[in-house]
Image 1 (tube, rainbow over the protein chains, first blue to last red):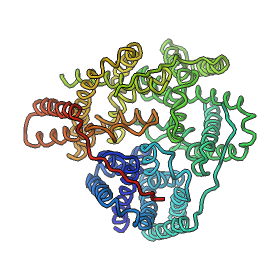
Image 2: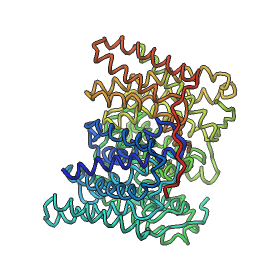
Image 3: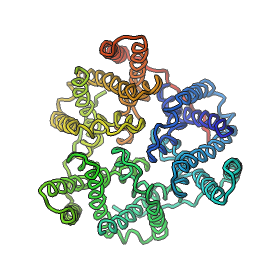
Length: 205
Length: 205
Length: 205
């Protein structure tokens, strides 16, 4: 299945961004592998813990751990050339965001959850690997401050729910949402679409 | 039920404190909503993950997400006037702390857990939304350094367990603990009751 | 059982290191107790949440909470003398690391998980209490930057899986891995064995 192939590409790309983030914090190779794994698989794991959906994907398919660790090691080996690939990464990461989202939505839908929970499950899967990466690297999560990211996840999930509700077949909906969500993410990067910032100065204490 | 109404008020108040914390970190509107949601619903979610209690409250009642997001948006719209409401917030937050605690205690008790776990469940529900908020905002959690907060949660939970054990009816116990815990929290704010600090200077490494 | 006694010693030692870390952050006594509890019991709790293994150990045996809190209070009372015990702590912590690891491996094995998941479960149990402690204290986790620690966990888990696979009896394997893993940890401390660091400077954004 197409989504499966894209999923493998996506966790590999996410693992690489995690490995580079760890390198910026001067971690050792073990830290690199952990941050890469958390970035790639943490969103889906959090979704499964929230929904009580056991066993988790990578517990059932430990091969995923192998892909992620391999991708992290490749990223450290090629670190010198990585900044030339910046554009490639952003594209793979965008594809991964939308693929993760749709997988998360499908998991919640198959478990019989209502529309709002399907959208939340998609967003957790798509965006929270990066949140966990930033927490472990001791940073304010990037996705709370940058151009449209998790919002793409929510829009994709919303479209997925609506189109299925409208009676379209699942494969069509999945492919359509994959293309549409990916396009929005690319446009958001290209034109620096951002959510309005909320800045609050008053000291409460 | 009274506790239910107080619960809605409490998650709304907690969501507002989360939104303001996000604003202090210059997050975008999406970050604001996530931090608000985690602050309001994170404590109960953590309790459910620790106890293996599925489905979680907001997964069963997605309307809670709606209340929380609405409260967060109202807080950003009214941010300019928020510091005038400081006192109101502290009071609502104190009410929320005690209401969350009693709900958490009831969940653990209905699942048949022993007294110590009932108290821990109450404390996780009452206090750990704020801990997760502070971790996501990249701060040392406030409740580990400020006036009596989680301790109010533990005292409330302890009284709840003891009074039920002593044979009082559940409604009486719940209302009594709600009033008593709320009073202690108000006194702690008024007289700046604090736990003794533990300061350790020696370098271990 | 030997592992059980070592486990009690280990959670007490881990609780003490957590209490001292909290003291360095000037937390109050409540914060001290929470950080101590998370350090001692957080790794096993995370393992249980990841594997969907309920009820968790300390929920079934709330007495563990008592040991941990007592150890934390002793650490604060004796803080002045704690740096004289640095060597003792490192040794107890090393013993705890290996004992936690083997307990985590046994839990995953009894639940029927494959080799890779048994090793991950051992590593989560052995090393992630310290990761959670560092996240709550707002620091980059130590184990991602210091001498061999989690790697000892992985090696111990790997040996455990291989030796059981080879047909050795469980008690022999457990004791052998306990001794072997502990020895490697002591050597890693003595000779400052470290994983290679990965340092990445290029700005991606």
